[in-house]
Image (cartoon, rainbow, N blue to C red; front, side, top):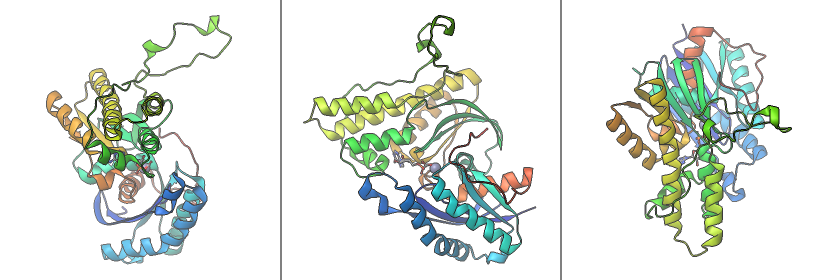
Amino acid sequence: MAAVCLAIETSCDETAAAVVRYPAEVLSSVVSSQYVHAQYGGVVPELAARAHMELLVPIVRQALADAGVPAAGVDLVCVTHTPGLLGALLTGLPFAKALAFGLNKPFVGVHHIEGHLFAVRLEHPDASPPFLAAVLSGGHTELLLVRDWCSYEELGSTLDDALGEAFDKSAKLLGLPYPGGAALEQLARSGRPTIPFPVSAPTRESVPNVSSAHSPFPIPHYPTSLDFSFSGLKTAVLYYLRDHPDADRADVAASFQTAAVASVLNRLNQAIDRTGFSTVAVSGGVAANGFLRERLADLAVRRSLRLLIPRPGYCTDNAAMIGAAGLERFRRFGPSPFGLPATARTPLH
Ligand code: KG4
Ligand code: ZN
């Protein structure tokens, strides 16, 4: 059984490598955030790929050195192969394959969202499914039922913007640099949540009562009523700032954050009611948000939940979580084929 893996993450704008021992002991974790994108207000895929190419070798060397593990001491190479920016994935994935091939070791491709889920295991090695999980990142907002490690059922996801995307877009409207989530949280600390932004998430009940038999147009179909929607909130911020150019930006930030977090908590409450689960995991970049963490802690006390939430450094993109996921995948399903492609989008389940 593979005990120690080298893991690599290059799906977006973090170049990361880690050495992890099964099941989730982090021997080293190196993350380099690319600052080149800030001047463009968003990630420029071509620049991200080029930066990964420059950073991969030094970051991997650093991870091995920090762990005190020589390349030959690695049993397995794990790497994110989906979802993400194709050009960015196409740096780390072939690099990991070549490294594994050269070392004559197996390799495992990991789904980035599954990686975010396994960040929970890095923090809580004793976490054992089944439990509810919310993955709140810049590209995804997923509410999952984790039946077992590597076995998931989607309860809801966002119909439009991801939660982190809503933070980033609202931060941009507030004149904050990209990525704006953490900066918005910082600004919100000195504001008051006085503006009643919409706390919304469409439900089955909110879909107009028309059947497709009476409409020539496709009727939106919400497979569950635990989906999220954040584009209306972002638009509310846009209109508020347009109509109140002298608004206190800290108050706008605090109001946005309050509404966004309330939407998440509402959905979690519904999912807990529906499933009866009392263990809830929350991860992904937005789970680094201190206000969300406080509200979740309150909820956990109020509803006697076990809250599984990784430290902020394991919430945002890192390779240690990819390693933990890859090690479990390898144990259950063996290695990935070397022909495994990089794909920009793939459902988790
Ligand atoms: O998981 P992640 O690092 O990358 C993706 O897989 O997308 O998440 C990045 C997202 C960005 O939208 C970023 O603004 C947001 O997480 N984020 C935060 C905070 N830290 C990162 N959002 C709110 N508050 C934070 N403290
Ligand atoms: Zn991520």
